[in-house]
Length: 492
Image (tube, rainbow, N blue to C red):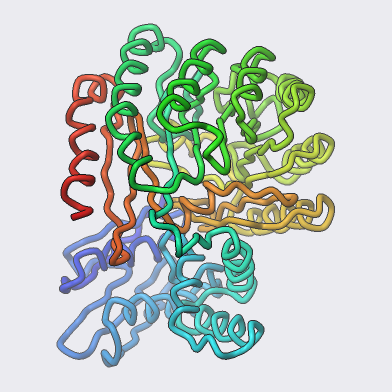
């Protein structure tokens, strides 16, 4: 792998150097971008001197080529450096990344922010045109992605409105079960393989219920409840009896009938049984996820999913027979050794099942995943191919399956720096929209979960639980105290 040495002057913006290196990596995805303090040896340098800054692009593999650009600081330095660097790199490479200089994971939050800054007296068409113009000119976002972000935000808006006359703020609940049958090659989430299940499981469930007992009644007394989401890991690693016990435990504190929506992730078909599905149906769960990621057996074997393509289909059919109508299926585009042929096979299989939702993820190669260590040993889709694959996925889901994109987010280290999109046939997941837009408070329980409390002044208060299961069990009283302090201090 080629290396790029990058020099960035120190400024009052502590994260600017990192943000510039992330942007550079979008243009040079096959290079290792390294920050250096030796500007004379750098391939790219941004030198800030008083009210001016200079961007120099040295060889970068092009013989005897060296570009230098000078700029006067006329606006926010942090923004202007990134915008100027973008323009320089686009000119050098002939490539313009679809999401421009945006690095945040929530582009639609920016849409809402811009909308609130603009005059609301103009027509919807004029408002959307003004938002698109701001995204494309200031943030260098492509017209296609600007239109997508506006479309998704407009769809979400009707679902995110809350009753302003209600005496309590709205909140949703997340409960984490951090166990999986196996750990996938690309996974960076806090999950524990079943080989550790017996060692920690009973103690974990006791600690989780203790946290629920201490905090959930406080949430109930101070909030209007919206959605309940049980995720992981894979919650269906629990037995049918354990699933029923957990749902009954929550019901005893906050009646399940009070939630607008209840989702349980049943992501791995090798954890799904008719008995478990019947429990979910009987307890009022309206929505589940059965997540194949791919419908190609060779890829399933490669990424560590110890089940077959047929078992995915069987689990889906079984869920429909039990009476669960809302079924989401997650797909990951850009998996190792997968190219357009394999993507077509996956979408043909998904079309035959007709799920109510499909969530399309662009592969993100996380530092804590096994894939990060081994990626050079696989055939990976590159930028141009990923553009074709994503265009194909949109065409199938929108034009052939008649779905609507309803939520959108991005991650660091995504192949080609693209996005994840949730598509719906008319029954969107309320929780997904809430968590992405950070529109309401989310109280989260279990190892690795993060509570996000929306303060009256608009500030978001984060309260994180430790990721490690053993440490979570040992320090459960501390986890409870962290959240309990919100109800005694933050709401004063």
